[in-house]
Amino acid sequence: MSLAASPDPLHELYASHHGWLIGWLRRKLGCPEHAADVAQDTFLRLIGSRDVLAGICEPRAYLSTTAKRLIIDRARRQAIEQAYLAELAALADPLTGFPSPEETLIAVEALTHIAAALENVPAKAGEAFLLHYLDGLTHAEIGERLGVGPRMVRKYLVQCLLACAPAEPA
Image (cartoon, rainbow, N blue to C red; front, side, top):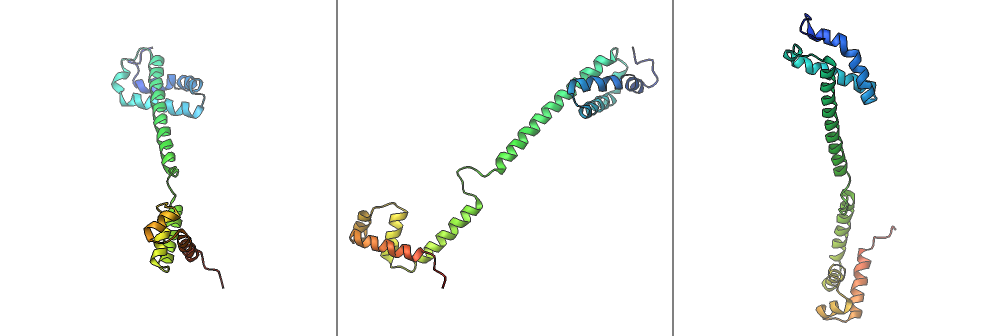
């Protein structure tokens, strides 16, 4: 059936083949809503290329080819959209191995509390605390650096730990 003889070839094509195209797309896609969307997009594509209408000899073949291409385009868009959404979801998850903002705040508050407590102890006690807990030195190594025995280092560490302990309510 040639569409060249019709006064409005697009209207004729739509009236003659829209129902067939919807049915074909329903079988292909399994969803009436998606079938209706693709059928509409197919005819919109034809509106954009009205000069092609005069040369269509096999309208169903032309419509099905156009619809197949639109289905492929739609699948590509959905794949890109899914990949984008997956990437956004991955970015929204807290990064593994990195502290959350709440954990960072707790750590900063703890360090502030420790720094304030260490200001209230003798300098050698504070230095012993830092050498032991930050540098990982043993009591003997700390004693050598500070010129005291390991027993005095233990006393310094106990003094600092008591200063760092939270105050008991009165």
